[in-house]
Image (cartoon, rainbow, N blue to C red; front, side, top):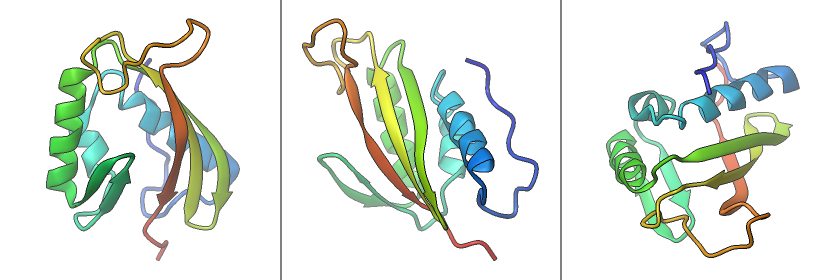
Length: 129
């Protein structure tokens, strides 16, 4: 998958469904292959992340370390993100992904017709100025 271009106006969050879908496609493209710096740069320095069973962590440095560890474990990672809700500065995104690596944190026995992992992500963005 090619990296999607950033939206034209960088000084605000997506305000329309079309802008939000474009933003989600862009973020999806940063995972295949992993572009850890660009992913981390999309977060504020004081970000707080809650991810599954991983203890809550804070800050871009911790996020970069998290993505680095995950990318080392997940070979041939394939990810699909789909915008489900845009409400003000919040988005709800459905995520489906899989990895060919048996050591991946997402590798689970499954029927061949089901994705290796799926879930929903709530993204609360910094407020628009």
